[in-house]
Image 1 (cartoon, rainbow, N blue to C red):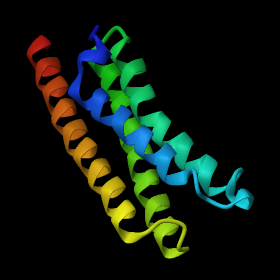
Image 2: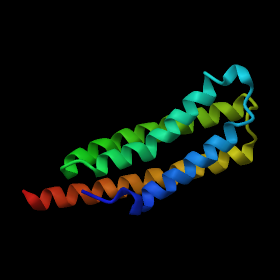
Image 3: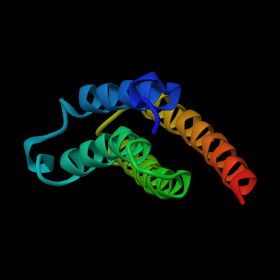
Image 4: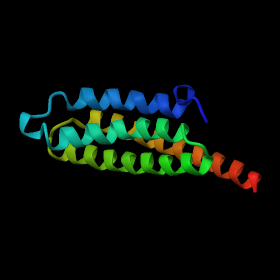
Length: 123
């Protein structure tokens, strides 16, 4: 079991959520239940799954939830690109969010590798 609040990946993912909320504040009302909601749910899913996985009983279970977080990261990247194409955010905001997603994604892959190595040592 890991203390998720001490994990750098969780901290970075939490920063990402804040930035997504700020970026979507100005989206039009008709997007409230559309892209705004979807982006926020995808963003919140990332640190939430990291936290949930860290509280599980095995590295294999943690790895599963990191995989879910990875999927949410990819969703968020797609939604961010779409937001820029629809002129809901500017290129700078889009790039900031996508760069953060890429950083979290790289950290996720590294953490999964570490968990897999320690799983193999247990065998």
